[in-house]
Length: 128
Image (cartoon, rainbow, N blue to C red; front, side, top):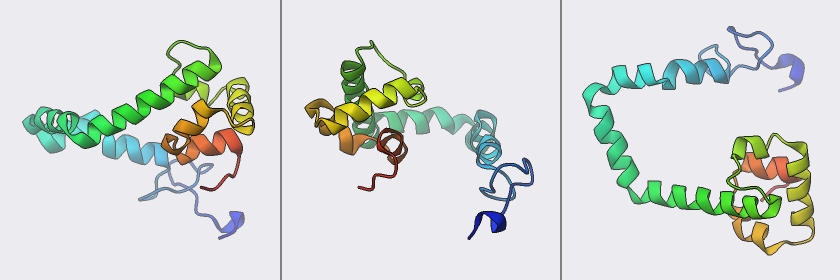
């Protein structure tokens, strides 16, 4: 589909359509906000959250995030960097790209745990 044929969101005509006529931000706000979740799950919500936090899936995800964050902290020489800030900072991205280019073992060790969006931020259209 070409850019001229791409459907635009009804809520924000300058943003592309995500679902149900809304852009991604508005759709997620409407369908995943705390009010929506509380209304849908009610008193069962704390139990669902507790069960997820105790699950192996949750522990594995937290472990991967911790390893990535620790590796990036070492590479950037920053204590406890926030991932959102790191991947919106062009200097940090350039530093990570240089580390990847020189084959830094710290970054290559956690490369598979980075999200596609993070990989793309570091090295453009790299496909893995």
